[in-house]
Amino acid sequence: MLANYAPILIFLVISTALGMVLLALGFALGGGQKDAAKLSPYECGFEAFEDTRMRFDVRYYLVAILFIIFDLEIAFLFPWAVSLDRIGLFGLAAMGIFLAVLIVGFIYEWRKGALEWD
Image (cartoon, rainbow, N blue to C red; front, side, top):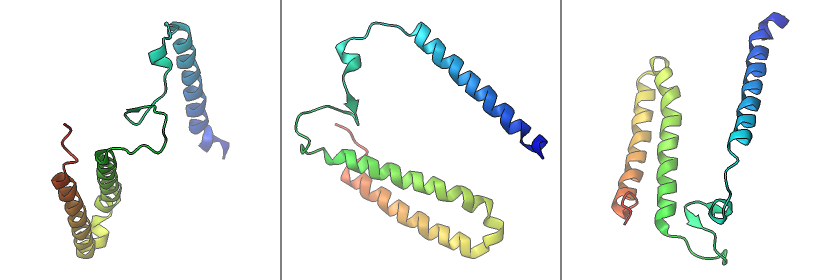
């Protein structure tokens, strides 16, 4: 029974050792000068600001919605493609409806200008 788990144990040991070696190399070789720009906080494409209630540009949220749309599409297309022979015509029609809804969302974002950065 233990022999079945040996490859997993070997993989975990090798990956842990490799991770530790790479971290050690990073600390040993990456001792560069740290200036104020490297140490400053940076998040979401915006520099840190004082007022947390400051409004963001709506394009930021439109790009986030666009990412979610295509991320969900890919997440649902893989299992659908694998099981297409078992789900038949009903599965094909359901995926067609799903893709139509995603295309409508994509066209909405395109019309709103989410794909254009000035």
